[in-house]
Image 1 (cartoon, rainbow, N blue to C red):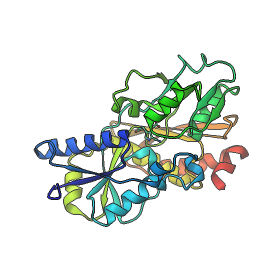
Image 2 (image 1 turned 60 degrees about the vertical axis):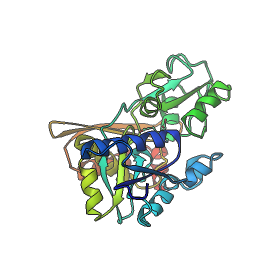
Image 3 (image 1 turned 90 degrees about the vertical axis):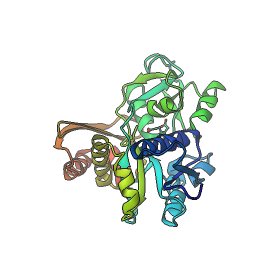
Image 4 (image 1 turned 120 degrees about the vertical axis):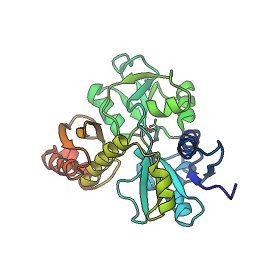
Length: 303
Ligand SMILES: NCc1[nH]cc(CCC(=O)O)c1CC(=O)O
């Protein structure tokens, strides 16, 4: 299918492929193209190859995007599909996030217990997300959180094998994999970008930018851009426990965000309102929060 009018680059995990297919179908529908017109090309990333260490130890979120970026810049693909949650706050100038699909369920689901309160005393919860670990320990300091890597099915298999008592996964991912009945919703403020699928192309590639503009969901794009401006302003490592969720209604953006210490004992939460499209507001909020945050929180962002 080298003659395809659009070649999508994606990681090869089942979730990434499901998301790439959603994008392909959206473009085909918007253009009135037959199903299968858009081509999907799998690119293996270092994040997929290295499974035995926490992401934060081996180079961070760039591991998911580096090879996709290379293929895109080399012209092997026309665009890359990303989970916005996994995309670094700062992207190369030569690339542009041109579209986002409508955001799915932003909540996390707990698998292995009926609620956080129902977890046994001292239970082991598998999560490699500093945010989820800190938020859980804030509610239940007795819990033991351990890193768990691998795609959604691998993690569920580790839970089934008894390696951990419970785990947390994004509802959006479970739903997209047809596992909508797995786990129970829990009320944690989500990661910036959670539930949103973004499509990135070469900056200035007008033909592809036009194709992607036709599927862009403006409220999602505005909300996720605000969350990313907030994270950018925090600087430091993107693996610090940070949560943020923007929602847009009638050109007004409601912004909720939280910074935590690793053990969840210190946290700072804010709620603010901005005009939709204002990126300076969320960025200023991030800097102000960091300045006021307890030392144990500040230390995670200044390193
Ligand atoms: N870090 C992996 C990742 N990246 C995006 C999702 C889920 C889909 C989404 O949030 O859009 C997941 C799995 C998970 O956190 O359970």
